[in-house]
Length: 164
Image 1 (cartoon, helix red, strand yellow):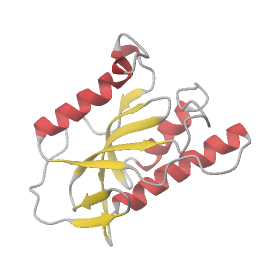
Image 2: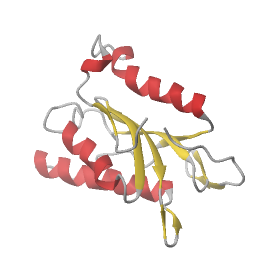
Image 3: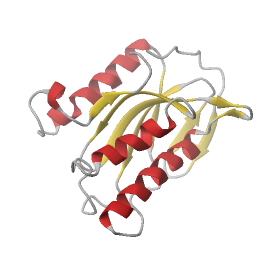
């Protein structure tokens, strides 16, 4: 379970959606395909590549808590880590995660071009209850979408290296 820092100050970035960022904070993030017809992210060839993009940065640029891969989007709870220059920027971090997965998926499918929407949705987790609600949402998302009856059997859900 992440340790929650009190909100003291934020950097607000504005694209289409506002993105509030602060050092030491944990985020619920959703990122989506630019076009759901490109690929089914739950294809057994594709989902492991998507998950490995999150795991690739786990422990170096981010702490990964919970995640699930859905047919056209991914949910995760992450905490950007600090480097000598400060905390990794969430927007840049998500760009790296998406780039890493897009490269592998495009190579596998012998395709070129954009895979992910440029922006992602993020929500600052304010406390333990907020974390638990979002973790439960991630866990139950495949059930709510009608993809499976038992969330424990969803093969594309998991937790990162951080204990819950």
